[in-house]
Structure formats: C-alpha cells, structure tokens
Length: 139
Image (cartoon, rainbow, N blue to C red; front, side):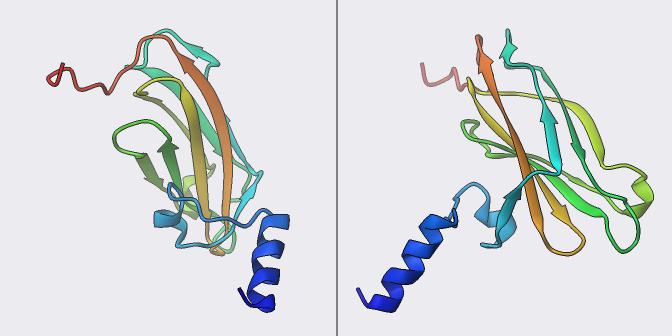
C-alpha cells in the first residue's frame, strides 16, 4: 500500500468515513451526518406487524432550504428500504407519522435528503417480541 493511500484510509477511519451498504444506494457515497433528524419509535414493540413511528427534520422548508425526501431503512427486514417520502417547500413541515412492519429487533434509520444535496440521519433501536415480515412457507 502506498503511503498516500494509507494516509487517506487512516484519515477516513479517524473522521468516521465509511461505506454503508444500507445507505449508499441512496446517498451514492455522499457523507451522512448525524443530527437534524428525529426518529421516534417505541423501545419495545409487542408485535412487529404494526409499529408506530414519527420522523421530523429540522428545516425551514423554504424554496432555498427544504427536505427533498425522508427514507426509512431497516437493518433486518427482507426489503431494507421500507419507505421513501418525497417532500417539497410547500409541505410546510418535514414531519411523517406512520406505522411500519419490522422483522425482529433492530435499528431503524431515518435518512433525510436535503435540497442542498446533504444527507442527515437519526436512528432508533426497537426490541420486537413477535416478528413480522417472516416467510412461513419455508418452515
């Protein structure tokens, strides 16, 4: 390994730069920052078939500065990208309330794509006692 390549890898590790197979299809390798996104989910869900969640993103929602999309990503569901909500400046507020299905205990990520091309994220850990999204035909 060349010295320059080694330094680039070392700096990437020091500043938290890493490839994330769950986020890269959306971000195309752009950096993702923590903050601005609040994901509220229960710590314990009795049933993974219907878990309540709400996402809010700090944004003035003006023509110059708004949320383009909010993506919900699951670490364990058969389909990692659970939902994508497309917004614009006329939405007024960047808030989504819904229910999702979860295939077991996991971390759920809310990824906000901003009008300036930046990405922000928030996450929540949920313990699920009865999983959903399970294929029972193979049993």
